[in-house]
Each structure stands twice: as C-alpha cells, then as structure tokens.
Length: 384
Image 1: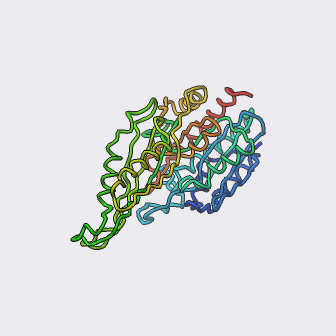
Image 2: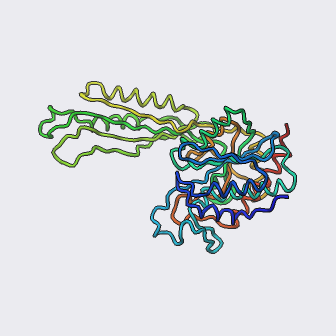
Image 3: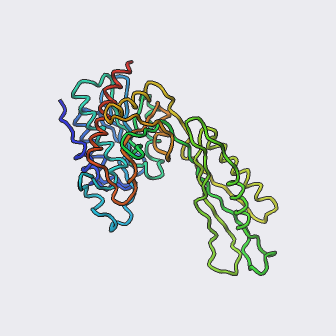
C-alpha cells in the first residue's frame, strides 16, 4: 500500500526548487520520485530546454488526468518579500513562496489525493499527470508538444482537471469550464526619416500608426457570447525610437492583444488586422507590417456529467456551489481540450505572481479534499 502524502510538505519541497521558466531546478525530479513511489509509470518528455512529465497509474479506461506546471514566474524585487521566496516558510498559517498559489500546491494536493484513492482501491481505470515546465513562458515546448506527442501515439485521456488557481474571492467560489482565446499582434510602420522642418522630404510613420490603432480600437468586437464576456482589444505598446526633437522618425511600432470569445477565431481576427493595415498603407510612402501570434482559441467544456461532478466535489469538500466561469486569462487547458473535456479548479488566485505569494495551509488541505472527492466521484460515475 502506498504511503500517505502530506500535501503541504510536498508543496514546500517543490517551492524550494526555484523553477523559474525555463529552469527546472529539480522540481520535476521531486514530483517524479513521489509518483513513482505510488506506482505511476513516469515518462520524462523533454522538448528544447523544457522538462515535461507524463505519468500514469493503470492502463485501463477511463483515464482521469491532472494537468499543471512546475515552472513559476520570476520573484521580482526579492527585497520586497517578507520571506525568502524559495524558503517555503509557513507564517501564521500561510505558506509563503513563489509558486505556492500558481500552482505547486495544486500539484501536491492532487498527488496526495491520488495516494488516498489508490490506497482505497478507488481507481477503476487510470490516473495520470501531465506536468510541464513551460506554462509561464512562451508555452511552445510544454503542454502543447506533450499533447501532440500523446495524440500521435494514440494515448487516450478521457477527462482532465487543471490545477490553476481558479477561486476568485473565497475558496471554491469558481471553477473554469472554458477560456477566451488570445491573439497578439505586432505592427511596424516604416517610413522615411527626415528633418521636422522639411516634412515633404520624409514619410512620418507615427500618424499612420495612430490612425490604424484608432480604427482597430473603434470596432466593437461583440456584445458577448453565451457563457462568455465580450471580447476586448488592448494596445500594450506604442513606440517610435527617437532621441531627437527635430527628427521625424523612420519607424513606429505597436503591440496589441485581443481576448476573444467564440464569436471569433484567431485567424479571422489576424486577417482583419492585416486588412486594416493594408488600408492604412494606401498612399503612404512606406510600409505597414503586421505579425500576428495566436496563443489559443476560445473553448467551452459543455455542461454535463463531468462539469457537474467537479462542482459536486467542490460542494462536498468546501460546502459551496462554485460558479462555472470562462473569465480570466489563458491556461494550458487550451491545448488539453484537443484531447478531452477539461475543467480547472484550484486555490484563490489573489496573490499569484505577487510579492509574498501565499497559500493558507488550511486551503491546501481543503483542495486535497476537493480532489479526493472528485476522484472518488469520477470512477463511480464513468465506466468503460
């Protein structure tokens, strides 16, 4: 019988590995050793400089997968922290450390819940872990590549739980059943540099860029979509590198991001931006170039037995009815949904990426209870 796992102590061990993307710093080794001790077959999948792990207990279906990431964002100003960001100290009942909320506690809680389920003989199928070290980075060598590799091999995952910190204000008040899509676009306008007193000899890229951005921002993308908030476009950078006051710059540049609901696709939005750029370039003695990057499409896990099961598990452990939401940023769920239905449930996210990121010890144990209830309900509900 596998030994019980203390979710809080395992979280502390993971936090003590400063796995700032793309570094692993031994975090994956810690988790792999724990899972191997539970009888999981563990497979490291390294792409580029990124460490990934796929581990599975059992060979039968259904296969319930937990997905998450061991990588964390940088500490920022270390002097602003009340404790060393990687010391994993517990202060007044709160575990402080980078990754405590996002999302090493969730990984540890699901591992502890898995140990309970295996010991109790509840796993009438398979449990698996899909863990990446590239969620906080560009996400090109992480979950997406693991999903592609597993799909090519015919590996079947029936349902997936992602441990992102989805609770909004209080533990268990929200789980995520979908996400808006995201597209970034860089716009570079190249004109002709010249003296401000002789504008006829130059081609100023700045007015062209300003007009283009005004057109893009003026469009109301939509009024929302069932289960989704309206799409929004945000300009995140405008610059025209120029150290002189009497020089018309030769180049102006902007970046923007659109978070979009299922009214749109990334490709359609990219085509719209490019079309407006061509119009903006008409009659201009220069060029307007757009480089779009689609980081994910909008998706929704339709209400049904799986979403109901997850909500019931939260109610079992926390005593609250969670809101089924599609708000917030993107997550690796956008890649996993190509394999199976996916729902995200985790801690309160208020301190993620912040100074003194911290998770109350009691809530880490409560999250383990949610996952335990979820696993038990899952294998009692789904059979193959």
